[in-house]
Length: 392
Image (cartoon, rainbow, N blue to C red; front, side, top):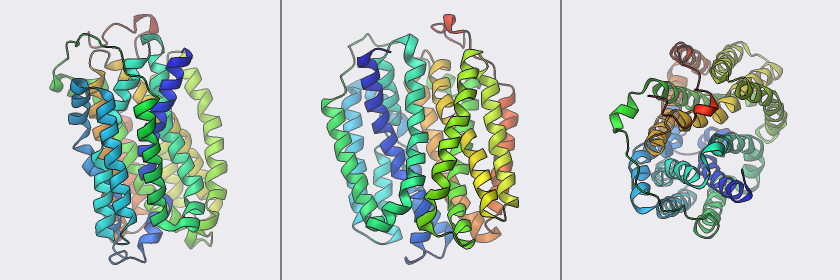
């Protein structure tokens, strides 16, 4: 990857990660903050307000991805970031679940993930595209890591309103980056696109779409419960970073050899299955966790699998969809958003009516179903055949 490709990829990965930060930064603190708001005693309403970002976003990924093919990546990305900033300002100006939900819905309406991924693909050569997509996918894990470590200290310092204002300021900086820093892709002849429903039904992409749905659903549902469990065990919110930081650093160190070995040995299928298995084990440990040490162990197991999948899956989508990356990534990001909403809304509902541990039981069931679906996935073709269409 040359310096221009690396610079553009890192800038776009930063913008991509900012959007995910719009969700993740609230996860460790939102359920506790909402307890002091009208309706905050109803876990379903709390989950609905948190998940509004994602359900609205789900409706816009595919159309905005297609729009970026027609009018260009930059206008779509800048327009989406403007929606993000306006929504954050609305949420910051109201201490009410309804208006927070409206603001987060507007933030989600700027669904630019597919356009950003397509922009990355436009700016890098074929031989380094997998690396570039892995960097963009890794920005999600980094955003999540930063959120878990920094959310509680930032919340104590500026409260939830200040967190929304911080996101708005970061969104404004991202607009400037998109306008002036990231180059426009070269003009190319319009490719011949595979029909939408052909891509939707492609088995390897369907498995990855199921995977990203379950991954994000279990993640959000889990963090409706984990902060409360830690507080109940006498570990205050202001100290949660003392668990999250070492867990995340160790998890990155543990996942890296699996990722490198899987790529080197052309065994990415095995790496994906190992990661899914780790997610399943983590949910089982959470159910039996009666101490802070056990919760920390469950978090470590979970994040090794989570970080591995967030780096692998977007890259796999781009490589399996050689002929129609924009559409495939739009579908992938749509199912990701649906998973985030499902996890927030259904996780809140399950918690409200069946108790906190039921969230992990639901997670085990979803992950086990995902493991069955993923088991029959094929290995990617060797890299020397990367430019061939896998479906062929």
